[in-house]
Amino acid sequence: MIVRETNLPGVKLLEPEVFGDHRGFFMESYNARTFAELGLNHDFIQDNHSLSVKLHVLRGMHYQLGPKAQTKLVRVSAGKIYDVVIDIRQGSPTFGKWQGFELSADNKLQLLVPQGFAHGFCTLTHNCEVQYKVDDLYSPEHDRGIAWNDPVLAIDWPTSTPILSDKDGKHPVLADAEINFVYEG
Image 1 (cartoon, helix red, strand yellow):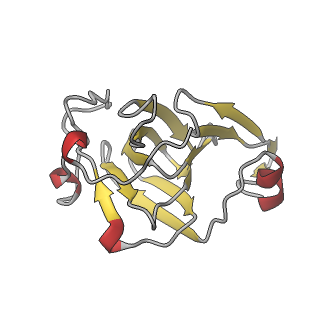
Image 2 (cartoon, helix red, strand yellow):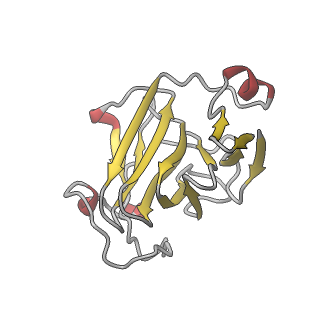
Image 3 (cartoon, helix red, strand yellow):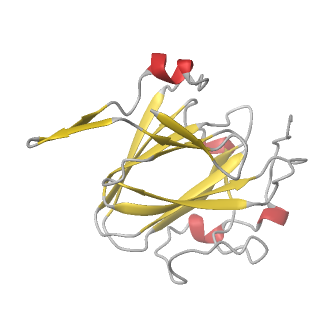
């Protein structure tokens, strides 16, 4: 597995080793020992799987407040997404900065999104399946979000008219969002 650093400290792009032949391919998307050897020590306890049937479905920008914050390991098993991460750790030199990544079933890249970052994605194909591991359970009372179209963040989404859930259409801008993450250097 190759680990690539990103512009946001702590966020990592992972490239698994893929073994292909005339039948298809095999890869390990997660191996606790390999991750530990790479310094990625997360105890993932829940797997999530979403299907977005239409192009330009946008899910985000989500996070859970501490003490129920989640680290996520995101990958695409069908289709292609534009995946976005925002640093929401108060005091961080990259607070309010975002970075986007193209994840797809073809490129097999995975994104490690640590606690203290908001996360969301927009589908670039129909019938897009996204799977992700988390290191804490879903907690509705800690569930929060940031507006996908916050003008200060100015995220360069692949569409200006995404398909949103009611909940995702009502998130506040970052300046008004409830955040309890503090940058620890």
